[in-house]
Image: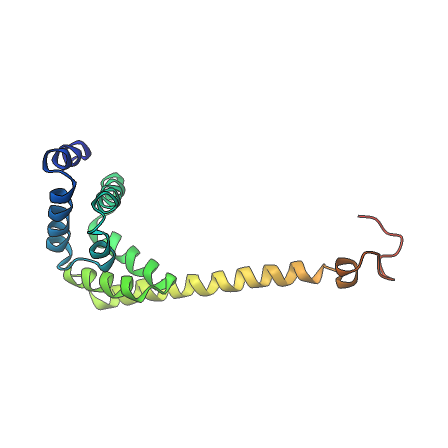
Length: 150
């Protein structure tokens, strides 16, 4: 369905009926309705715009559904969102993605998350080594930096 078709359907049905139909469609595609969408059902305008945004991203992508789910698994793992991770593991499994590929996405995410922690922390450590605590805290200069200007 094109973006224009989606908008036309919303206008014809009205936001409440369109939101209800969207949730049925999501359930048909995922086998369940993700919690965040259930939470949004009482705010149809928010739900509809979220789904339209999701659909626009997927339509503009050249990635297939399996790749999108593996990315979703990896991002959920890296963000440590257990609800998202469980959902995307189930969806990936329903798409026929083998456990070893799902595990590989999780391991890659963990590796990148670990590298991010190390890269950020070591950069801060290097930056802090160059800070003189006496000069930084006091209003004057320390014995080492006395008379020096930046």
